[in-house]
Amino acid sequence: AKATFFVIGKQIATRPELIQRMVQEGHQIGLHTWDHVALRGLGAGEVSRQLEKSRAALVELVGEQDFMLRPPYGFVDETVKQCAGGPIICWSVDTEDWRDEDVARIVKAAVEDVRDGDIILMHDIFRSSVDAALECVDELQRRGFALVTVEELLTLRGREPAAGEDYRKVPPGE
Image (cartoon, rainbow, N blue to C red; front, top):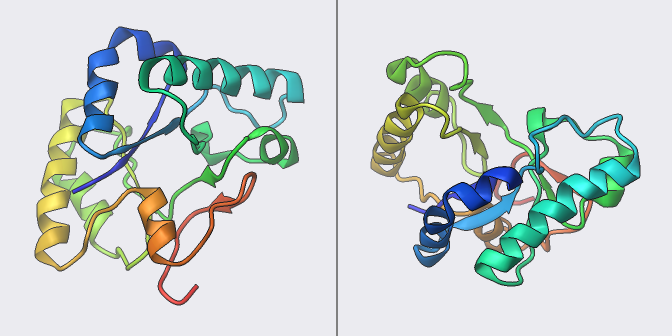
């Protein structure tokens, strides 16, 4: 199973080996701002600073790549779209795994109504989120789902990711 990991810039230096491992294993890495701030409503200078500082840290660690953006809280406005420098990825299934550490509830939220092309939001802030993610992988694969990166999902659907465009799901036939 592959995943897309949107990383907080200021945390990149604390676990460089983990990010390098993600890339080596074929996962996709993306931007999640430098300080995990809500970008909506900020000026272009601050949005750009949040993204460019994170982008520079990732390029230094893993090399030049096109990094997609997942804005914290999914908040997007015209300034964010103009400054993103790549596609903006949100989600269609929110596990709310940050709310509690109930693995069973998180797994149910992720797999209960999932459809082909959905983008599932999970975090790595608690061990329970990681445990739930592993259970979700097993259950979704058992149901016949292929878990891919967001970039792979767009490619499989014949979609060329566009800078500043907001993606929340990519169902078949779109």
